[in-house]
Image (cartoon, rainbow, N blue to C red; front, side, top):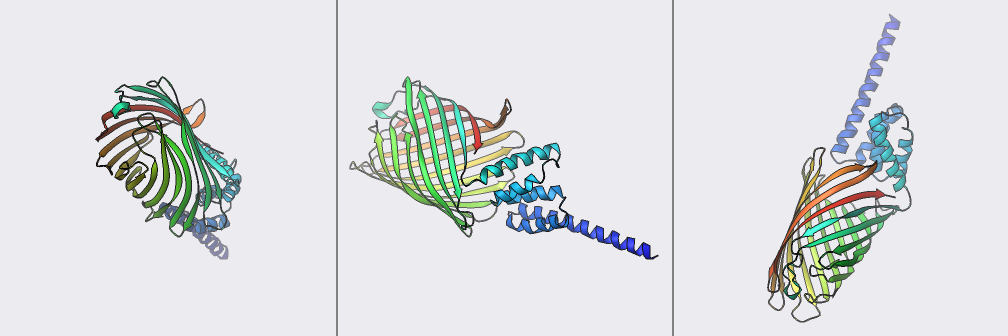
Amino acid sequence: MRIFYLAAAFSIAAGSVAAQAVSDLDHARAQIAAGQTQAALAPLERLLLTDPNDDQARLLYARTLYDLGDYEGAERELALLQGRLGAGQSAYAADLLAKSRARSKPFRGSGTLRTGLRYATDPTLGAGAAATNEDDVTAFVGIDIRLQHDIAGTGGGAAFAEFDLRGEAHSEADAFDGFYGGLRFGLELPQADITFVPYLTAYSDRTFDGGRQNNYGGGIALRHALSRRTEITAGIEMLERDYDNTALYSDGSAVRASFGVRYKASAGLTLGAAIAHEALDADIVGAGYDAPELTLEAAYALPGSGLLFGRIVLIDRDYDNGRSEKIDDFFVGYSRPLTIGGLRDVSLQAGVRHERRRGTAFDGDNTSVELSLVRGFEF
């Protein structure tokens, strides 16, 4: 009889431990789903102390450490899982291990390579004497890189440098049009639920009449997570601006302020809206302007078949000399991941854009179609 009671006691104890393990794992998953990633650590650590051979708990623990920025800890946990997982989870763990090793370095980087073609019906948009009313085919190639160094003792703060460079060749100009791009140096400084991002920047863009706009300056942006679904952004930027090879705009000093909201409406659907105001104090009398701006964005991840996204930008410029200019910019695109010869992190992107400009010196419409290949990378 005593043996029977002992066996029953051991059975009840084992069942209690198993039930607690399931409870801890479910609790951790619930915390992560609720956006409380930090709170998921305690039940996972308790579970691994009880059963160090629970591979599912260790894999989730490694992912949680990775999401919290503890890349060395994630690398350590993932190394313990090598040879212990099934085929599908092994590939996932190997990919996460490679990313953890890359990010555990003092400096880590990421970026994209892009190349493609763009066809436009009237890229100069009837811009006075610069108007050609000719269609154009553009071949382009570009690269953007972000280098980041995590700052200890700042709760996730980092110093970063961003670089992008792109080149374009236009059939309308019958020549290589040159390189455009820029640099940005800054800090990410989290304070409670708000992240402040002060930065310095210098960049150049092609104007629609074939000239070049150069900008130098800096600003500060902030991000605030209202909830796990909603984030607000705001910022102010001050730039010195000059132009080359265009008579349409004046050099001067620009100040831009913006405020935006991004909302994850449902699984796969993200909505965004932003308002901005840009003021240019021009060197030429009367060429300065005030320009309110509205941007609407949406993105939807199609189940198993890519990403559909769109953007609307509406700008209304009022110049000091009484001129006005209205710009409406509509874009819709589609991105689908590809595997080319075993090469991963490649996507095919296609998009259609329509621009409409109305004003004293501008009166034109342009529709363009773009097709590109994009490759992401980390180092």
